[in-house]
Structure formats: structure tokens, C-alpha cells
Length: 321
Ligand SMILES: Nc1ncnc2c1ncn2[C@@H]1O[C@H](COP(=O)(O)OP(=O)(O)OP(=O)(O)O)[C@@H](O)[C@H]1O
Ligand SMILES: N[C@@H](CCO)C(=O)O
Image 1 (tube, rainbow, N blue to C red):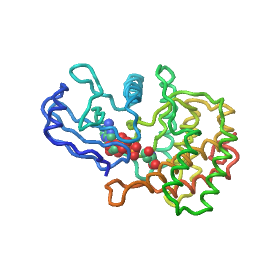
Image 2: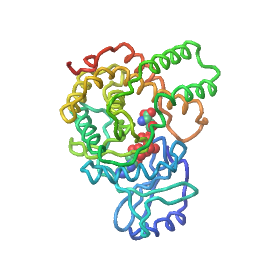
Image 3: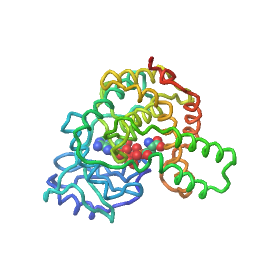
Image 4: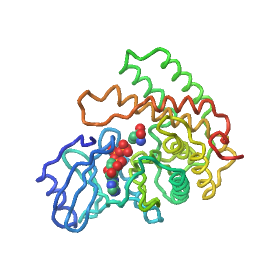
């Protein structure tokens, strides 16, 4: 359960009094998520999500995330809006952590996404990329190519028992990606973590996107690669080419992919699989036993890395050339 920091009713009541939201009626910790502490907060005027930012969020990046949500919402992308306090600030402190309240988004996330959901994600991702082009702030991707080897070194240090064959395999993947990573693709604001649990649907329609806390400035096509990994594999780990085709075709219809982006897709997908393998592996070996967080399986992403390593053309993901 992702409630790393607990708060008392008295602390929350004092915090809420800074906002024009009426009295605090009730609140509860939200079990889902692995990164930050989230509470659902019922106030007289509305319901909100209160987030206390934890380990992977640098407080200096919070203005980027909060302004981005505001920018995207104003550009027609349905995402939470940061709530301003009576003094105009959106960022505060609670229980020693940076904290913000955002609007509550209606909808549910899809445990078993279908081809239609993948298509909706492709369209919305492309629209988000277009809307991001007029966002003026920039943020470096803190989990990009050059961050992967140091993170892998930390994983190896934390897990001295790791199998030698896995060490060799990941080192070889890092060497290959470092030699081939594309540097000239169109850049812009990317979500960088658009997994099914961060996309809500209502009545079969995509109703909104949450969790912009990995958003950054990077190659737009890398965001597609993250989505291919997160949306287009089945629970038995096989790749569903129909889902891949739906996502890519819908994206391409809203924002046509360049030749360079098409060519780079297998490398971007392998890199995205490695990135999620790394954070999952690191959390797996460093999260203490008995902790209330549900750890995510790194092996799923080792399998995906191996799948992408064998793809040499975007048609392998279902988009005809
Ligand atoms: N604006 C919102 N409206 C409605 N529910 C929300 C909102 N923000 C967060 N939630 C709920 O809280 C849960 C966790 O939120 P979030 O995904 O932001 O946490 P996280 O710890 O950053 O998770 P992740 O592991 O995806 O990085 C979501 O699955 C959702 O149920
Ligand atoms: N979406 C990530 C967790 C949040 O970083 C994963 O599934 O590993």
C-alpha cells in the first residue's frame, strides 16, 4: 500500500484550512501506486486527491509537474488540476513532505485492456504530445539512457547473489542501447509512465490521465515505446500485435510518425523495457520485507527486453511501413 507517510486528522484539518474547500469531512489512504503517498480527501465543497511526494520526486521538479497538469487541462487533455490555496500557492508541506491537492478524476483503470483501449491510448498520447508543444518549461528525464547504467550498478551492489548470466545480459543490453540510442528524434513533453493504472475510462471512453510525476522533456516516440510495453502484452507475457497495431495506428493518425521514429521504435521499446526493469529490480531488492508496498515484478520486463531485442522493424509491432 502506498502510504509511506501517515498523517493525523489534526494535521490534515490544519492543512485543509489553507484551501477554500470547506470543512474536512473524511479521508482515507489509497492502497494503489508505488511512488507517492496518496489520500482521498472528502471536503464540504468537493473530493480531492492529496499527494505527499516521496523518494523519487525531487521537490524542485514539482512546479514543472503541477504547471504541466494545468497547461494540459487548459489545452483540452483531461487530467487533474492542482488546487490553489487561499494564498495562491499550489505546493505546501504536510508531515515534513512536499504536498499538493489535485482535483479528483472520475473513472476506473482497465485491468484487462482491449484493442479498443489501446487505440484510445494511442490517440490521447498523440494529442497530449501536441498539447505539450506549447508548454514552456523543460525537465530532463531523470531515468533516461545515461541514468540506466548507474542504476544497474546499484542493483548489482544491492543484490550480490544475482545470477552471472543476468549481469552479462543486462550489460550487453546497456552496451547495445548506448551505441544505438537515437539522438535526433522530435522532442517535447512526455508522460513517461502512461501505464494502464494511470489512464481512466468511463463508459468505454478514455476519461483522463493521472500521475505526471515522471513527465519530462524527451523524444516523443519514447513515450509510445513505454505504452507499447505497458499496454500491448498479455498476462502470459506474449505480445499482442493487434493491440500494438491499434495503438500505433491511432497515434499515427493523430500525429504522423517520422521515418526516424519508425526506425528507432525497436531500440526505444527495448530501452523502455530496461528502464522499468531497473526501477522494479531496484525496488525489489531494496524494499524491506514486511513493507506495505506491493512490489512490481522485474522479470516481466526482462522478458519484454528479450522480446524487443528480436524485433528489427516497426512492422513487428503491427504498423505496416
Ligand atoms: N486525480 C485523481 N483522481 C482520482 N483518483 C486518483 C487521482 N490521482 C490518483 N488517484 C488514485 O490514486 C492511485 C495512485 O495514484 P498515482 O498513480 O498517482 O500514485 P503513484 O504512487 O505515483 O503510482 P505509480 O505506481 O503509478 O507511479 C491511482 O491508481 C488512483 O486510484
Ligand atoms: N509504472 C511503473 C511504476 C511506477 O513507476 C511500473 O509499472 O513499474
